[in-house]
Image (cartoon, rainbow, N blue to C red):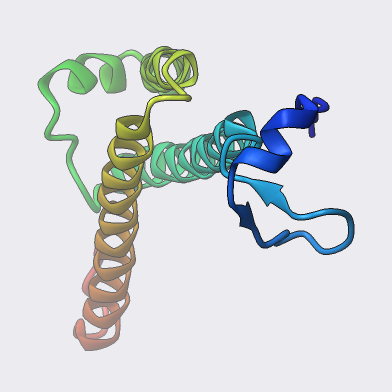
Length: 153
């Protein structure tokens, strides 16, 4: 973390705040480095982007598997065209979307609304993963209930 030495008069003219990190002299509100908070936000934004990349990859894998097995159909009209051109085309489409959105979020990483927007995206992706889980659970249940000799997709 970056620290600068405050002017001597600043330590005497402002009330002291407790040192939350332990050790050293207590800081004052004027010497509390704002960039430490921004750096913490940077870390949170990067962590959320990493989770979004992982969940997006799992969504891609489940989409390809679900379409190949006939378990699901792609509902996104743009993605349908890419599904018809193979899994690599779909990977290029989804990857381009994730990379472009991540670049925009990374560029705005110091803005507080970025964290809120990424939290909303994470909630949506978690709900998508829960939907995939439910789809596979229903498929497993239907396989068990199917009469002998009945072929499911």
